[in-house]
Image (cartoon, rainbow, N blue to C red; front, top):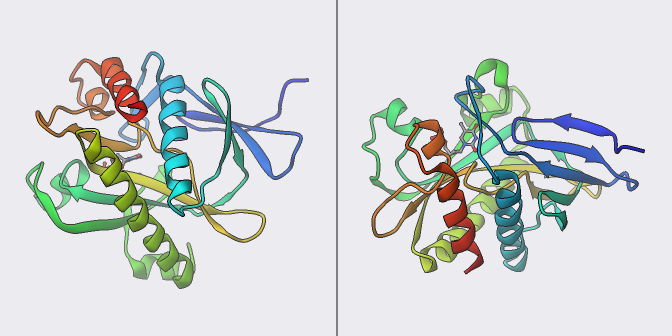
Length: 234
Ligand code: TMP
């Protein structure tokens, strides 16, 4: 019997498993940008992102951040704890790039004085807008205690990943995290960490090694994902 598809997102398909507390996440080669307005495929992305995310989630587990990952069951598939996801995306910025340049006039590549945390509402129909603590409170998206724990975890992720990538001559410019609650009520890191959800720049040349190559039609998209897999596995 084919596994029941629970949800299909832009980059992953989530399937039910025999265990109600576990789901299977299949990473797709499909790529979108600008709220799905731009669509394409990136060859081998599913397999490479599954591998990269597995390596990074294991690293985070070793460093005290609980993640959704149980095991990689196929090249493009991860068995994961089922989470009730919070309706927010958490972005951490170490250097200015992307939307903060457009929104606030930062010059791309300027280093932040300290890691900057931003919350976005996960709602495609609204274009995932930036939200403030007042919005989070009024809309009851997460409780104050959950918000503070998410911030603590996101900054811990930043310490661990920034050091890991620095050793591999990669600048972790910014990235997006998603958190949820497991069946025991713990706040757990979910979704993925990959070149789809991070900006990675080569530390020496500042060459972009992430989805910005697709977003901005820079060419060398597959090669960038392959290079990041090699660096993460080195
Ligand atoms: P932004 O500069 O467009 O706000 O993106 C910040 C970071 O979040 C960047 O590393 C890309 C990542 N991101 C996602 O993973 N999903 C998204 O839908 C968006 C808009 C950004």
